[in-house]
Length: 147
Image 1: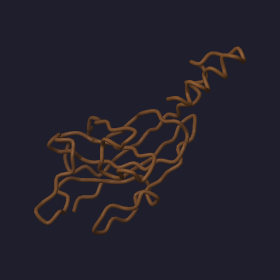
Image 2: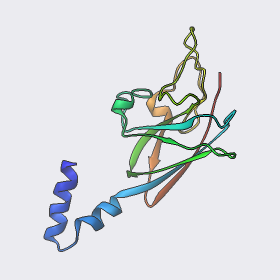
Image 3: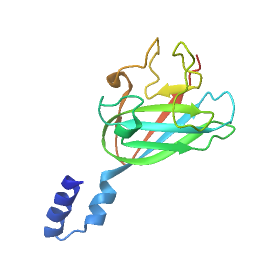
Image 4: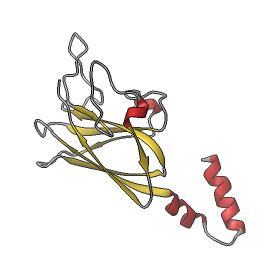
C-alpha cells in the first residue's frame, strides 16, 4: 500500500491520475475449476504471494474468497498485481471455510493447486504451484482431487 501511494504521488507530479495507474497495475485473473463430485457448498480460493502460510493459513493469504459452483464447475475471478503466485482451491462442501480431514489426516473434501502438480501425502511446495500472473489477464485451469 505504501509503495502504491508513493507511485501515485510520483505519477501525480507527471500530470497523470493515480486512478489510471492503479487500474493499469491490476491484472484480471480467471481460475476455472472442474472435477466437482457435486454442487454442494462453495469453491474456496486462496492465493499466496510467498511460501509463508502456504497452502492453508487463510490469514496469510492475499486473496481468500468463495465462489458459487455451477453444473460445469466454477470460475473464480479477481484482480492481482502482476507477479508470481500460488493458488490453492477447495471444494468446501459444508461451507466451514477449511479443508476437513478424517482421523488419519486425509482430506475429506476436494482440493487442487495451480499448475495441477501431483499430490502425494502432503501439499505441493509453493514453487511447484507458482504461476505467473500477467496483465491484462491470466487464465488458469485447476482440476480437483478427492482422496
